[in-house]
Image (cartoon, rainbow, N blue to C red; front, side, top):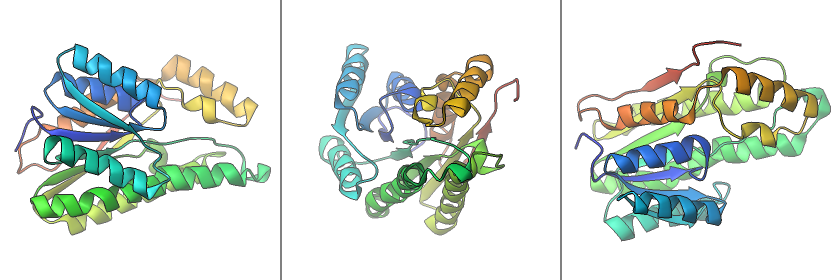
Length: 245
């Protein structure tokens, strides 16, 4: 089924940034939104906003580092709406730093959230998609998954991994399932709050404030991928700001 209206869409990392923008845009176009993120209060406020605007939304607190949380999110979608059309793995963190600083806990967080979170989403949604005979995975990577630069090697490594996982999934999916990778450049979100190195955080904040694209630009790319006819599979969308660093 092409188009967006009446599709059931799960979104992780839905409480802010790209996830929030995608939830609002897809709900406006008639999708039934299932919101997942760690912050329940922000999810509740977003769900209420969607409902007040005439849309449909439910939510559950979700930590993508916990496989059972992803299973609960998919179960909520199926129990509330009877199916699952699209699973958007959007949760991510970016606490970048020089490798010499040995911020191993930050490395582990990026691996657990950016990479394992995507895998846990696949583990939760893939059996449902197979049983239904349809379904669409949309995974958020980054242009850092195409090119790495100093201080971003671990973050970039997780995004290279998401690209590889997504491509492998696409090759295994067969004709009934769809897989799309979204690779944005710098986006106007709160990602700099997680950067533990102050010098790098200040530099990234300045770049973001000068050059970053709005989250809605990425949301529109997600909507474009979803609304394509069934015989068209959008493999990857790379989105860069007009001005480059």
